[in-house]
Image 1 (tube, rainbow over the protein chains, first blue to last red):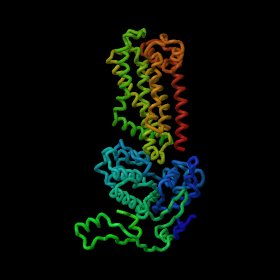
Image 2 (image 1 turned 30 degrees about the horizontal axis):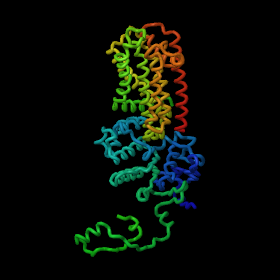
Image 3 (image 1 turned 60 degrees about the vertical axis):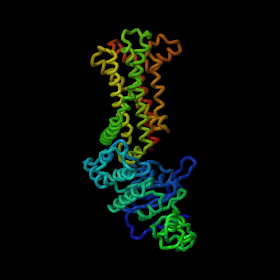
Image 4 (image 1 turned 90 degrees about the vertical axis):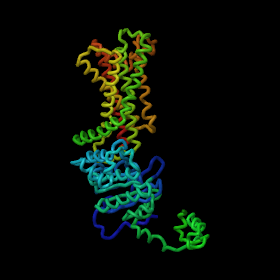
Length: 280
Length: 253
């Protein structure tokens, strides 16, 4: 069953990314079984799914690294199979599997990408981006010495060189600590604010919720839901409030023991389901 | 597209040369095995070897140079493998750059790195008593043959670099190449070997290359050996290049 909420009124422009009937198998394993979606220009689109759902395969096909078995996809109006060169000129790829060079410094990484993207002043482009991503102090240090958050910021900065209209972020915050994660989110919001189309894959629900204009859920090789957060919420029955027993947290116990709280020992307080599913 | 190819290859070659500049140990370790072999053969076995030459270092050096290249190119496979594994390769492939620039950058870097290792080995040989009265032309010919040999082995190294599934696998292919000169005229004349071994030794590439380089450095006529050596190098280069390209195109679509 596929729930298509694709048609949002008032969207006259051609989609920045258009995917139709994408199939891909690796030997026996069917990874994609007919994926369809559109991404409007200048929007942030999240492809949400668990590990192995096929998110990365979609991104690899769209970024011309992999051929699909069947189906068609266009990026910035160019066919990913027939016009791979033009697609590559329109995109940049960041995240899980697109790495930075650890032996080079942050600045050298940016200069390299700027030269490969034929920027007229690679050094200036690099310095501007270093400043924008708060990496100026670390500019001349080897990337191997960077923290996870700095590395991901550099990675994002590298994908902005040459201002490609479409950016793919594959699991941009996987393995980051909460602080670094917020930094990356901030950077993605800035990108979107400048009119760049962002396709983001993530397995974190809150990440999609925080960043995306539209969210598509990829499950077992198909898009099983696609819409704005509000639309997706409407797919579910109205919220019912259930009450379940909540075990006292260590904090509750601590407060009870030291007698600091204004309540008695909360042996069995109640909380909505969502809280109970998130034991602390 | 040609303009792209040149500027992309230049940018990417500078990148890998920086890698070498920042881990010069790769050049040192490349040179150390051949230097150790040279010391061993000259000062330990040298007295017992009947090479028909009063200066055994002179006799030995050409084979040592081949061993230097054979151990040096394993780093090309290694670096290429790391690029593939680490994901930087995919970043480059998703960018609007000339398709083959990524490979050529590694190949050119290999030429530079091996050249430096070769120079180091020749300098050590000089300190150990290597002497040659060869003129500029003969030295240029030696350099040309070594360049061709390095290029051929480098393209050969690209294949495991692209296909290996582990670091060990990426560099292990070079071990047989390092041993090839041992069963050749590199250390002892082939006449001293028993029949089948001698037949193998005289008809494998290392012997013709060693004999050619030795002849050039000793200011002798090289004759047919030169053409056999060139044929081996060009043949190997062509096969390795074609296979490496087809493996690459299967990898990057």
